[in-house]
Image (cartoon, rainbow, N blue to C red):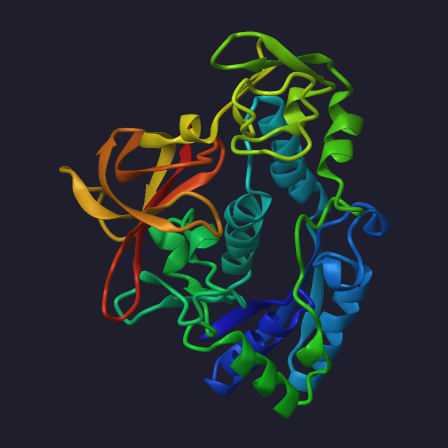
Length: 356
C-alpha cells in the first residue's frame, strides 16, 4: 500500500515507519509542525512538537530511505487541542489533550489529507494492535499501551490506520532502532503536555483565564474552609496543593470532590466521598461493530493510566452509562471512559465516550 508515516521525532514512530518499509509498503514520512512558536513548547526529552523533534524525524527518514515532508498544522492544533483544553478546564472538566490530538489532528486532519493525496493508510508509532479482524487491541507491552487514547477513533479511521509496534515491547523497539542505525534509539520518551513549556498547568490556565477568586467548601459541613484563585486549577480526586485553612474535624485529609464553575466553588471532602458506582458519558464511539442494543458486560478504564473495573455498559442514543461492579475514586468529567472486552489475543477496545 501507499502509506503516510506520521513521524514525531521519537523512536516509536521511526521504527513504525521502518517496519512499514520492511513490509513492502510505499512509505512517505511526514512531521506535524504543531507549534505556532516552537520556543513556547517543551524541548529536549520533554517535548514532541519542537524544532529538535522535526530534525530528528528528518534524520530518521533519511536513514530509512523515504521521502519526508513537514506539514504545518499549528492553527488546527491550537483550535482543536489547545483552545479545547482551556475551555474544558474553564467548564470544570479535566480534558486529555493527547486523546483530543489523536481524534482531531492525527486521525482526522492528517488522515483526511492523506486520503485526498492518494495514500491508503496512515502508520503511527502508537503502542496498540489492529488484528486481522480489524479490531483495536491493547499492546503486548501493557506499561506502554496506548489503546485508551486511540479509543476515540471511528471504525472508518481504524480501517485506514496501521500500528506496527503493538506486538513489541518498548525495549524491543529501542533495540531494533539501534540495529537500524537510528539516532533516536536512546531518545527519552516525551512526557506531560507538549504545549505547556514549563509543565505548570495552573499558570498556563491562569494566563488565559485570569484569576477568579472563590471559595473552597467542605461537603459535609457546608463551611468555607479555604480559598482559591481559579477553580480551573483543580481536578476531581486532587489532594495536594489545596491550602485549606480549616482542618477536618477528624484530622483526615480532604480531596476535591467537584468543581462548580457557575458559583466558582471547589468542594472538598473525605476520600470515601469520591466513590462512584455509575458513570454517564456523552459522544460515544463504538468501534468494535454496530452499537449494541442491549447491555454489554465488559471492563472499563476511566483514566489513561487507570486500572480497569468490571461494568455493565448501556448505550442510549448519544449517552453511554456504565454501572461499575465496584466503586471507583477520582472519576473526572472530561476524561474518557473506554470499554474493553477481555480476549485471549489481547483486550479488545469496544468503544469510548467522554465522561459527563
